[in-house]
Image (cartoon, rainbow, N blue to C red):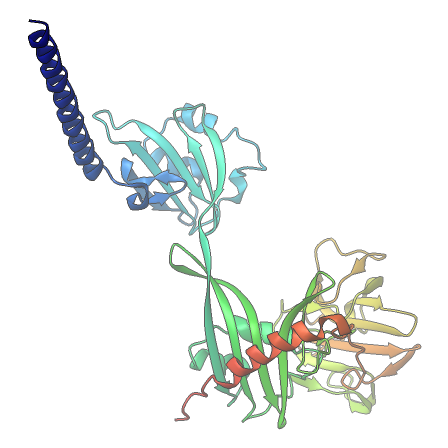
Length: 417
C-alpha cells in the first residue's frame, strides 16, 4: 500500500513537471511570435529623435512672406496654442529667425482622435526644435545624425579653378578652400592654363542629403611646373597644413585679401589714373571684384584706422600687424559689422566688403602694404611661415605624408576633350 502511494505521488509530480514545461514552451512560442510581429529597435525609423512611424506626419516649408502663425494655423492650431508655443526662450527658438525655405513638421498620434503631439521646426539641415504639444509645449533642441563621406577630385585648369571644378563635378566651394590653404605659397590670381590640382576631401551628409560642408584631407597643386602639397597634421594641439618637407603652409600674410578676382592695376610709380586722367604713383594693387565681395585681413593685427576719405580711398581700414608691416584696404562699400578702431583681428577675418567709394571708377579693392612706413609691392612681400614639424613628430608626420602622397598621386586626371 505504501509503495502504491509513493508510485502515485511520483506519477503526479511527473505529470505536473511535464505540464509546467509544456506551458513554458507554449509561452515561449507565443512570446517568439509576438517578438516576430513587433519591429526590433534596428527596424525602427527615427527622425527628430522619435520613432516616426508611430505618428502621422505632415510636412511643410516656410514660404516667402509667411509667418510662424500662418504655418501653425495651417496645421489646425488655435491662437492660444500658438501663443503658448512661442513663449519659449529665444536661446532655444527665436521666432524672428524664421526664414523662407526652412522645413517644419506636425506629428499626430495614430488614434481615433488624431491627437496633436509634436511640432518640429528645422532651424537648419542639422538642427531641429521639437515642441511637445501634450506637455506644456516644452521645447527640445536636437541634432540630426550626420556623417562625413570621403571624395576625390582632380583637374587641369583651362580658365579658372572655380570653373574647372564645376566642369569636373567637384564643388567650387573646395576651390575657395584650396585658395586659403595654398594662399601663402601660390598666387591664385596668377594661375595659368595647364596648372593642375588633386585633392581628397570629406563632405558632410544629413539623412543622405549632402551639405555644403567640406574638409580638405589632402591636396596637391601644380603651378608653373612646381608641385605644392598640403598635408594636414596636428602639432601642439593645432591642425595645420604642411608641405612635403614638413614646413607649415600658413605664413604671416595671405597672398591676397580676397578670393578669385582679377588684378586690374598693379604697383607702379607712374600709373595713368582713370578718374584724374593723369599719371601719378599707385603704390598698391587693385583687385577688380563685385560690390559686396568679402575682404580679409591678410594677417592678424590691430585696427588703427577705420574712416572715410572723400577725395581718395573712400571707406578704408588700416591694420598694424607688427612693428614692421601695416596694410590698408580702400574703396570699401561697408565695414564688417562690429569692427572698431583698437580691435585685434585674425588672419582671414572679414574686415569689410568691396565697393567703389571715394575716388574710384568702379568696384574694386585698392590694397596697400607698408614696410617701416614705406610703400612696398604687395605681390612681392615675404611671408614668414609658422613652426615646421618638430623633431619628435617627424616620424609620425612621415607616415601620414607618405600615405597621403601615394593616394593623391594615384588620382587620375580627367580625360581632356
